[in-house]
Length: 70
Image (tube, rainbow, N blue to C red):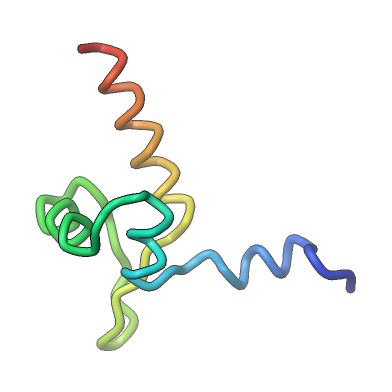
């Protein structure tokens, strides 16, 4: 298998809170706030919280759509 294949991308789909905040360009504190307000879904894996890249992309798209309507 070559580097950069779809299997490599799937292995990196779940991000830590630090990685997710960086991906969104926000602070971890704001990430926790929007997660608590149920604006963004997270996944619990035992004691770890992870964020799916597809869910982060949905949040970005929803925010862009919301901003256009203002």
